[in-house]
Image (tube, rainbow, N blue to C red; front, side, top):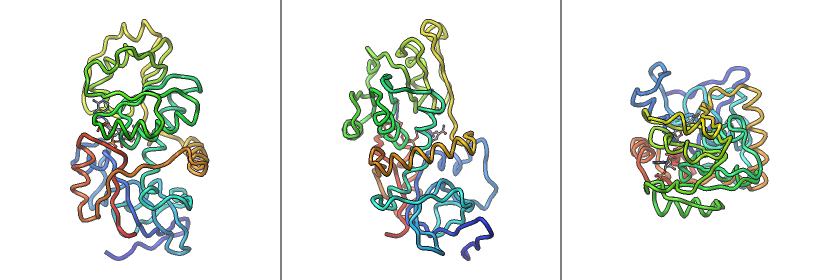
Length: 287
Ligand code: NAP
């Protein structure tokens, strides 16, 4: 296809790497509430170079899709990529870190000194949540479902790591905040692992779940939902300011677990929905 031509307020970005997210698979398979019109190019985040200036950037969205050699972007979707980060890391920033930031701070109002359980800490959003929570002075328990995933969570500085495949893995947990990646499996048990005044923030869910409301009542507990797409322009601005500071200071270090060429996007979609996460999955278009 011919390269898109930017109008006023738009930029053309040559894509070096594109992030793969579970939502890409929900949209591709038709299992998503807001389906785009066809033809459609998948992908909501990437990193590359502005065609007209040569500046290295990461993208928090595109107008034309990120799984492509070039992406047309609105100016507000384009952000400077710090020199010390590679393009694959740049493609792993937005969805993971912005969602984790919104979940922890804008929704759950997590504070320094609180105990945070990151339920599903080995994936993109989970690793970002561990790094953000530690940098903000929280105590962190992270869970993963493989030895490799648990080691990765430990390497991010989590104070404690548990295996969410074990049925008793929440024994003894009293968390002020639970960041939940798979609510349909865990929400019922999460409520019993909350401290008084605790908040569960639901980031991911793939089905229904039964809860015991009394577990919530006994703890003055709260269950919150989060959807990054609901953030206002002001909230997105605050998120970018916080992420820029954390990336520059080194407390936020995007972790790329697997890379695929663009031609293997289908394999990347299978991988992102398979167990054994260890960081983000990224499509590499050029070095
Ligand atoms: P990902 O990189 O594929 O990670 C998935 C995570 O879920 C892994 O850490 C995985 O651990 C964990 N997991 C698997 N089974 C689990 C269980 N029984 N209990 C707890 N965790 C479990 O995906 P992601 O990009 O981090 O996204 C995570 C979820 O958030 C997805 O459902 C995604 O759709 C959703 N999401 C929501 C928003 C929003 O705005 N609400 C934004 C971005 C993502 P193991 O593989 O080690 O078992």
